[in-house]
Amino acid sequence: MHIPYLIFFNAFPSHQGNINREHVTITSTRSEFNFTLVTPKFIKRQPGSSHLPEVQYYLSCVIGGSCPPYSAMRPLVFLCAQQVIKDEESACQALELLPQDLYPVLFKAAFMHGKTLLLQALVHTWPYPILSFKQLLQDRPHCRRALRQDWPHCLRALLQECPNCPRALLQDRPAEELVQAMIMGVKARLEESTDNGTQQSLYRRHPLQLLDMTGLLDYGYEEDLKTMKMWARTMTMAQTGICHLLDKVEQPNESPNKCRKVEDLPCTLLPVEVRVDLWVTPSSSGFLKQALQNNAISPLRLCCRDFRAEDLPPDITVDLLGLLDHSSLRRLDLSFFTLEAGGVWEIVASIMKFTNLLSLKLQYSNMDVWRLWAMLEGTFSFLASEMSKLKRLKELNLGTSWLSGQLRQLLSGLQCPLESLELPVCYLLPVDLSYLSQSPHAPHLKKLDLSGNNLSGDLLPPFQALLGEASDSLLCLKVTECQLMDVHLISTLPLLSRCTRLRYLGLYDNPLSSIGLKALLSRSEVMPDLQLVVYPFPVDCYKDLPGVPLSANLLEDYIDEEKFAQVQGEMHQMLIAAGRADVLWTTDVYGPNMPDYFSL
Image (cartoon, rainbow, N blue to C red):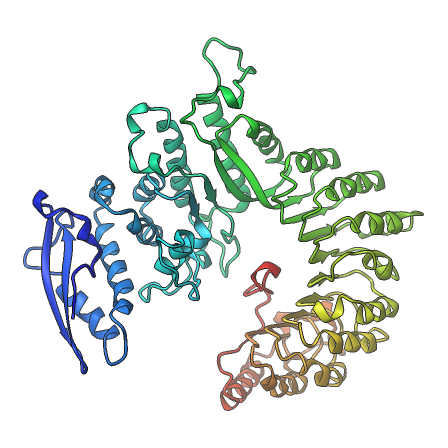
């Protein structure tokens, strides 16, 4: 069998004398495969070296028995891409010679190895209408469509199924210089688009329309000062848009405040939509507001998917919400420390204009003020009336809210059943959970967070009833700091074990002993999808503590390390015996977190 173009540099014309050809023959137990290795000469080798040993190694690994030849293509393509980017300067110069099909795999290789110049050049000459970081850098192993049939999906197929780089690169938080390099590539592209001499270039025949920067992670196991946080990306994107606007739109003989209209821009200056998730703080709100105001006349237009704001004054919050595209916003996440009742009413009225909103998070940290506000006449009637306008809402988080006895009034008017409900520290009453267990929302809940509510007393029966109703759909359950003891957990296990689709269970900061935890572990065998359990330090592993340590007193300084290590070893052996060693049981509350609703 002869596969003439297995290695991707077949695009280099032989008459130009810029390629090397080597032949590889691999004999498997069933057949013989002949491959032509074609590589560009700008890949510098050491004297006497060859790529053949590496290529033969990869082919030997993937070709044997029933493995089709195409399965060898992806690792070899990525192997060649890694060789190409070693000489970054030459790779940038050679981009014009490469077929556009190779841009995605070069992008992933350059991102993985931190090649900022090549990343900028790839974005500058990107040959597709869409450049999506999430599609390029995350694993989507189910996607196998051909590039020319459905190119956005093939980007996933080419880049995420490579056996040589199985991890999703978005699990690694992107360094600031990588993100900035890609932004500068877009900026250079826009600047060059006004030059008539570039009209026949590859990227002018295929103009970039959308740069999707959503899905870049910000939280990991350790802090990294080089990581570009969401607020920094917000500032960078805003700054890029404004600087380009000032460079291209303002006229030298006009006043700085007088800008041309969109129709007055050169026809070659096609707008590029930059889709981002924004995290806004008081220090960045002014700059972001200016960038959003300039969207109408800027060729680089910010389009927000998820909007998060922390402790902004009500007037600024309302102004920013008014500048966001109502049709494209997926999530609103607003948290406040001090807010008067009038400000809450104004903000809630602004939120309800986003009728396509899927996720709403309203969190208030000043409980004394919130309690007074909640006692005002008509407050919950107003909230319930306004929330009924959100016809597509699937996720609701009202953390640290005083909702005692008000859950029915708030949720009964929603048009669609919720799939994610987070009510931490909401001072819920039995009547609230009783309503929830009997509501249309219960059978659809995928994610439930009741942390900080005391489930050890009168709330336990309705909580157990809620678990029974949600058992067929529940994927994530978080009940940290709920004062659950062994007796409460063990009585809940029959209902919890019915949640056979459960993936995440958060029990941290509950006074449980090793007996209760082992009982839970033994029953978890009937949960085949379980991946992560965050459990508390067992109370019988503490020393020198007066009485039974409740949530606020669970101090790591009092842990008997030797006894805890013994309990951990016993639990690990139980997992191995049950064939569930793949499940992560951890006491690290700052490690892996409950999955985001949109990732479920």
